[in-house]
Image 1 (tube, rainbow, N blue to C red):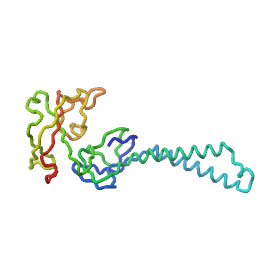
Image 2: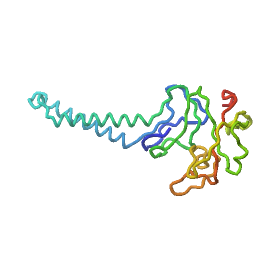
Image 3: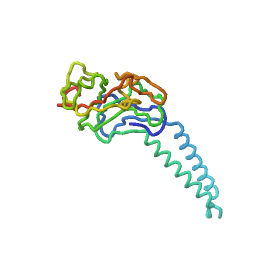
Length: 219
Protein backbone atom coordinates (compact mmCIF):
# COMPACT_ATOMS: atom_id res chain seq x y z
CA UNK A 1 0.00 0.00 0.00
CA UNK A 2 2.02 2.99 -1.20
CA UNK A 3 -0.08 6.21 -1.07
CA UNK A 4 0.45 8.22 -4.27
CA UNK A 5 0.60 11.59 -2.47
CA UNK A 6 2.22 12.87 0.70
CA UNK A 7 0.07 13.62 3.71
CA UNK A 8 -0.74 12.78 7.29
CA UNK A 9 -2.12 9.49 8.58
CA UNK A 10 -5.86 9.76 9.22
CA UNK A 11 -6.90 6.10 9.69
CA UNK A 12 -4.62 3.11 10.18
CA UNK A 13 -6.15 -0.36 10.58
CA UNK A 14 -2.98 -2.14 9.49
CA UNK A 15 -2.03 -4.68 12.14
CA UNK A 16 0.02 -7.68 11.10
CA UNK A 17 -2.21 -10.74 11.05
CA UNK A 18 -5.43 -8.71 11.27
CA UNK A 19 -8.41 -9.55 9.09
CA UNK A 20 -10.15 -6.57 7.48
CA UNK A 21 -13.67 -7.14 6.20
CA UNK A 22 -14.84 -6.23 2.72
CA UNK A 23 -15.58 -2.52 2.38
CA UNK A 24 -13.77 -1.48 5.55
CA UNK A 25 -11.07 1.19 5.46
CA UNK A 26 -7.57 -0.31 5.58
CA UNK A 27 -5.58 2.92 5.60
CA UNK A 28 -6.33 6.57 4.88
CA UNK A 29 -4.35 9.79 4.68
CA UNK A 30 -5.27 13.46 4.72
CA UNK A 31 -3.62 15.99 2.43
CA UNK A 32 -4.13 19.62 3.42
CA UNK A 33 -2.97 20.94 0.04
CA UNK A 34 -5.55 18.87 -1.85
CA UNK A 35 -8.29 19.92 0.58
CA UNK A 36 -7.32 23.58 0.18
CA UNK A 37 -7.30 23.31 -3.64
CA UNK A 38 -10.78 21.77 -3.59
CA UNK A 39 -12.17 24.35 -1.15
CA UNK A 40 -10.75 27.30 -3.13
CA UNK A 41 -12.05 25.95 -6.45
CA UNK A 42 -15.50 25.29 -4.98
CA UNK A 43 -15.62 28.81 -3.55
CA UNK A 44 -14.60 30.33 -6.89
CA UNK A 45 -17.23 28.26 -8.67
CA UNK A 46 -19.93 29.34 -6.21
CA UNK A 47 -18.94 33.01 -6.59
CA UNK A 48 -19.14 32.71 -10.36
CA UNK A 49 -22.62 31.20 -10.10
CA UNK A 50 -23.76 33.98 -7.73
CA UNK A 51 -22.54 36.70 -10.08
CA UNK A 52 -24.50 35.16 -12.92
CA UNK A 53 -27.61 34.88 -10.76
CA UNK A 54 -27.36 38.63 -10.16
CA UNK A 55 -27.62 39.17 -13.90
CA UNK A 56 -30.58 36.86 -14.39
CA UNK A 57 -32.78 39.61 -15.80
CA UNK A 58 -30.22 41.06 -18.16
CA UNK A 59 -29.27 40.18 -21.68
CA UNK A 60 -25.73 39.62 -20.37
CA UNK A 61 -27.01 36.67 -18.39
CA UNK A 62 -28.57 35.15 -21.51
CA UNK A 63 -25.41 35.63 -23.51
CA UNK A 64 -22.83 34.29 -21.08
CA UNK A 65 -19.31 35.19 -22.19
CA UNK A 66 -17.21 32.34 -23.44
CA UNK A 67 -14.45 33.12 -20.97
CA UNK A 68 -16.93 32.73 -18.08
CA UNK A 69 -18.06 29.33 -19.36
CA UNK A 70 -14.46 28.26 -19.93
CA UNK A 71 -13.49 29.28 -16.39
CA UNK A 72 -16.41 27.32 -14.92
CA UNK A 73 -15.40 24.21 -16.86
CA UNK A 74 -11.80 24.64 -15.73
CA UNK A 75 -12.87 24.92 -12.09
CA UNK A 76 -15.13 21.87 -12.37
CA UNK A 77 -12.29 19.88 -13.94
CA UNK A 78 -9.90 20.97 -11.20
CA UNK A 79 -12.34 19.96 -8.47
CA UNK A 80 -12.93 16.55 -10.07
CA UNK A 81 -9.22 15.83 -10.48
CA UNK A 82 -8.36 16.86 -6.91
CA UNK A 83 -11.23 14.79 -5.52
CA UNK A 84 -10.00 11.80 -7.53
CA UNK A 85 -6.49 12.22 -6.11
CA UNK A 86 -7.89 12.56 -2.60
CA UNK A 87 -9.92 9.36 -3.01
CA UNK A 88 -6.68 7.53 -3.88
CA UNK A 89 -5.43 8.28 -0.36
CA UNK A 90 -8.09 5.99 1.13
CA UNK A 91 -7.64 2.23 0.76
CA UNK A 92 -10.65 -0.04 1.28
CA UNK A 93 -10.73 -3.83 1.30
CA UNK A 94 -12.27 -5.18 -1.92
CA UNK A 95 -12.99 -8.42 -0.05
CA UNK A 96 -12.09 -9.97 3.29
CA UNK A 97 -8.35 -9.30 3.52
CA UNK A 98 -5.37 -10.35 5.62
CA UNK A 99 -2.63 -7.92 6.66
CA UNK A 100 0.76 -9.50 5.95
CA UNK A 101 2.98 -6.54 6.79
CA UNK A 102 2.49 -3.26 8.61
CA UNK A 103 5.00 -0.59 9.53
CA UNK A 104 4.54 0.13 13.26
CA UNK A 105 4.14 3.57 14.76
CA UNK A 106 1.96 5.09 12.05
CA UNK A 107 -0.44 6.90 14.36
CA UNK A 108 -2.94 9.52 13.15
CA UNK A 109 -1.11 12.75 12.39
CA UNK A 110 2.20 11.15 11.36
CA UNK A 111 3.48 12.66 8.10
CA UNK A 112 4.37 10.33 5.21
CA UNK A 113 6.01 11.12 1.89
CA UNK A 114 4.46 10.11 -1.42
CA UNK A 115 5.02 6.46 -2.29
CA UNK A 116 5.87 5.33 1.25
CA UNK A 117 4.93 1.66 1.55
CA UNK A 118 2.87 1.31 4.73
CA UNK A 119 1.94 -2.36 4.55
CA UNK A 120 0.93 -5.34 2.46
CA UNK A 121 -2.54 -6.88 2.28
CA UNK A 122 -3.75 -9.99 0.45
CA UNK A 123 -7.17 -11.65 0.02
CA UNK A 124 -8.09 -13.64 3.12
CA UNK A 125 -8.43 -16.89 1.18
CA UNK A 126 -5.06 -16.50 -0.58
CA UNK A 127 -2.10 -18.71 0.24
CA UNK A 128 0.61 -16.31 1.33
CA UNK A 129 4.33 -16.88 1.07
CA UNK A 130 6.52 -15.94 4.00
CA UNK A 131 9.66 -13.95 3.31
CA UNK A 132 12.78 -13.99 5.46
CA UNK A 133 16.46 -13.17 5.04
CA UNK A 134 19.47 -15.42 5.54
CA UNK A 135 23.06 -14.20 6.02
CA UNK A 136 25.25 -15.12 3.07
CA UNK A 137 27.55 -17.20 5.27
CA UNK A 138 24.59 -19.43 6.26
CA UNK A 139 22.81 -19.73 2.92
CA UNK A 140 24.31 -23.19 2.35
CA UNK A 141 22.01 -24.38 5.16
CA UNK A 142 18.86 -23.36 3.26
CA UNK A 143 18.01 -25.19 0.07
CA UNK A 144 14.85 -25.14 -2.05
CA UNK A 145 12.59 -27.93 -0.84
CA UNK A 146 14.05 -28.05 2.67
CA UNK A 147 11.60 -28.46 5.53
CA UNK A 148 11.41 -25.50 7.92
CA UNK A 149 9.28 -24.26 10.80
CA UNK A 150 7.77 -20.78 10.93
CA UNK A 151 7.30 -19.10 14.31
CA UNK A 152 5.24 -15.90 14.49
CA UNK A 153 6.35 -13.06 16.76
CA UNK A 154 2.72 -12.85 17.89
CA UNK A 155 2.56 -16.57 18.80
CA UNK A 156 6.09 -17.72 19.64
CA UNK A 157 4.95 -20.97 21.27
CA UNK A 158 3.59 -22.46 18.06
CA UNK A 159 5.69 -23.87 15.22
CA UNK A 160 4.14 -24.04 11.75
CA UNK A 161 5.82 -26.55 9.39
CA UNK A 162 6.56 -25.55 5.82
CA UNK A 163 9.13 -25.66 3.04
CA UNK A 164 11.54 -23.30 1.30
CA UNK A 165 10.34 -22.59 -2.25
CA UNK A 166 12.86 -19.95 -3.40
CA UNK A 167 16.26 -18.57 -2.43
CA UNK A 168 17.82 -15.56 -4.19
CA UNK A 169 20.54 -12.96 -3.55
CA UNK A 170 19.48 -9.51 -2.39
CA UNK A 171 20.50 -6.21 -3.93
CA UNK A 172 23.15 -4.79 -1.62
CA UNK A 173 21.43 -1.38 -1.66
CA UNK A 174 18.09 -2.32 -0.18
CA UNK A 175 15.76 -4.99 1.14
CA UNK A 176 12.28 -5.16 -0.39
CA UNK A 177 10.27 -5.76 2.79
CA UNK A 178 10.73 -2.59 4.83
CA UNK A 179 8.72 -4.04 7.72
CA UNK A 180 11.48 -6.63 8.30
CA UNK A 181 14.13 -3.96 8.89
CA UNK A 182 15.12 -3.00 12.43
CA UNK A 183 14.07 0.67 11.99
CA UNK A 184 10.51 -0.58 11.33
CA UNK A 185 10.34 -3.20 14.07
CA UNK A 186 11.86 -6.17 12.22
CA UNK A 187 15.00 -8.14 12.96
CA UNK A 188 17.11 -7.29 9.89
CA UNK A 189 20.17 -5.25 10.80
CA UNK A 190 20.55 -2.21 8.55
CA UNK A 191 23.60 -0.12 7.63
CA UNK A 192 22.13 3.03 6.03
CA UNK A 193 24.15 5.04 3.58
CA UNK A 194 23.31 7.94 1.24
CA UNK A 195 20.66 6.83 -1.23
CA UNK A 196 20.29 3.43 0.46
CA UNK A 197 18.39 3.81 3.77
CA UNK A 198 17.57 0.07 3.95
CA UNK A 199 20.93 -1.39 2.93
CA UNK A 200 21.53 -4.66 4.83
CA UNK A 201 24.41 -4.62 7.31
CA UNK A 202 25.81 -7.87 5.88
CA UNK A 203 25.28 -9.65 2.52
CA UNK A 204 22.04 -11.60 2.69
CA UNK A 205 19.83 -13.91 0.65
CA UNK A 206 16.05 -13.71 0.42
CA UNK A 207 14.15 -16.92 1.18
CA UNK A 208 10.47 -17.59 0.51
CA UNK A 209 8.54 -20.22 2.42
CA UNK A 210 5.15 -21.85 2.06
CA UNK A 211 3.29 -23.42 4.95
CA UNK A 212 1.92 -26.95 4.99
CA UNK A 213 -1.28 -25.70 6.65
CA UNK A 214 -1.83 -21.97 6.04
CA UNK A 215 -5.23 -22.18 7.77
CA UNK A 216 -3.77 -23.42 11.05
CA UNK A 217 -4.94 -21.63 14.24
CA UNK A 218 -2.73 -18.65 15.03
CA UNK A 219 -2.15 -17.69 11.39
